[in-house]
Image (cartoon, rainbow, N blue to C red; front, side, top):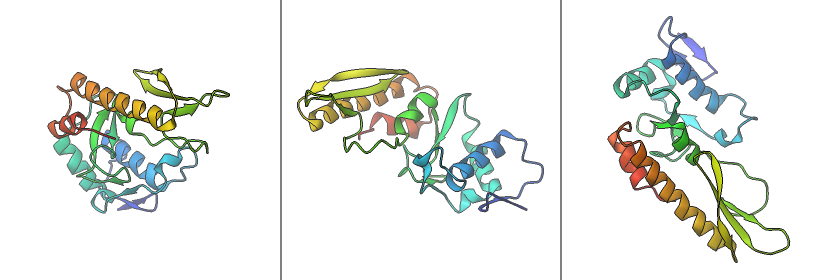
Length: 180
């Protein structure tokens, strides 16, 4: 047995060159390595079962190898802090990025909202299909945020339909019923 990043147990000899091991190692790294470069993983953990590589690999064997460019996600089915067999799924990166927790500057503004200098008005924006889309300007931060919420929920539902044939049924259902 080999201890990995002080937490994980690699109990399968010769596994370190497999895609399953790489996925497991990267999951551990996000949770237990120094995440100065990406503070959105601070406080994240791996379940007791997933700390053992053979358990994680067994879960992968059941789920199957994800399509190229898909990501291991813990946010959609879980609380965004725990990697486990009940909270993890695979998502296309375009969907996974929606759930990434962005650490914003100390503006005190709600997600998706910026204040227009000098006007006192608030702009709502959302990244969709790789482009930032302006959703309008509003008199209050709350109105701008509501536009962001509606756009985000609609975008998630739209992507669920686009990827429906490739998604696990529970993942599709979670995306279709997603609300902020």
